[in-house]
Length: 556
Image 1 (tube, rainbow, N blue to C red):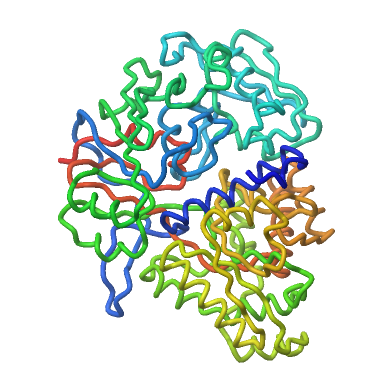
Image 2 (cartoon, rainbow, N blue to C red):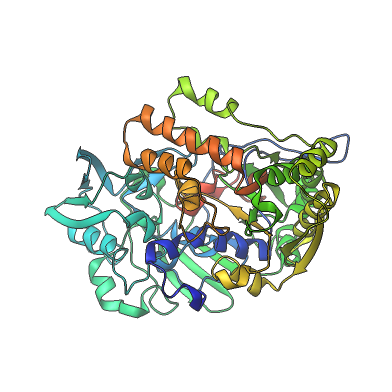
């Protein structure tokens, strides 16, 4: 993390992980969100796709399987894990109080139940009889120690933001924990189904200290797999935990070996050869190649990610919302999808995916999604709108990085759109390392008008995105400010009533879509490849927190 963040409050610094994780992921492969299934060829050469809720059930157990992963984690300490590599491993080893399911619903987990007796109090009943991998029994003390780490400044937890309104975490019974808030927060409980709710043995945390989560010590949690070994630079291995408490998610495989394969071509070749049995985040330019392979099957699933161009300079021509709207209308987003991802994806009409409204009352959900301004591809209308706003040859700088072909296609399409509305775009190519600093160091964004991000949420609530665009939020990279938007977000966070929460969320949604502090481009589904000998996974962005590997077994 850049030194420029050293004076920033922890809860603000933690918000950058959404974008940094996505930027790092893009350095290896480009992913995004929203529809899917096994792929097939259409007449125009694009790839048809559909969502697959669940791959065929396993017919039996397997001794082991291998899984490709695009980068080696720096740590598997849950407090320092907000990226695809560590989280997809931890999801199978460590568990949270609640569980984020593949269908994006939330259910009890290590907390067998919970109540909200007052607007600022959450009480969790801890499931009895759960054992850690070292054989010790889960207690309320373990939960307290695990949650409190996210509050401790010395931990520098990436999950500090969800705890920003937490006053205290206390043991109020042998198997009861009470969290007291400083003010009502409708997102807090939802975050406990993801990384913020992770529970580790208090004794292990005390014993490991600063070494917790490294290759030598690993972790000691309660999931269906336990940490086995970690060979730096090569692989990390998990083994089945036979005393796992939940029979519905008892591991079907005796072992999982995660192989670190940074090069996208190497990963695809490993799928084809059977060197690895599967992997998430299939490179989009390999969809067609893997469509009909005899080595296995390509699937697509639910996602919560939107590809956006971040407007990072509101002092230039993009400071006028009319110019931002004109630029978006001039971007051929369908063309980007076809050229960069074989048509696998959908044009995004807002900064959040439609499935984040799952918890909204049925009567209002459709109205929310329809009651939005739309920006269809119309270069002529876009140019006229830009001229009305005074565009006349002003320069804008678009930052990019030579990550992959899809990134290049996006950047070129945005530059062409800028030219079409009368701007003079300049593309500035940065190394992957320097590109990442755009998300961490305000100085790195000086002179940059636009840069690309892939922003995903960790809860089924648009607030996980919109809270990042409030005035003063660290991840509000362009310094955009709208009092009505801030008020709507605050109201949505502060109310538990479903109708009021949805109404306030919808107001923030409308304002952000009208003002376009970031330009939404498209969504893409989660992608996963399964080799011919395994099956059972549920394709979903929830793989970052749900024990997906436990369901993988033998294919009949």
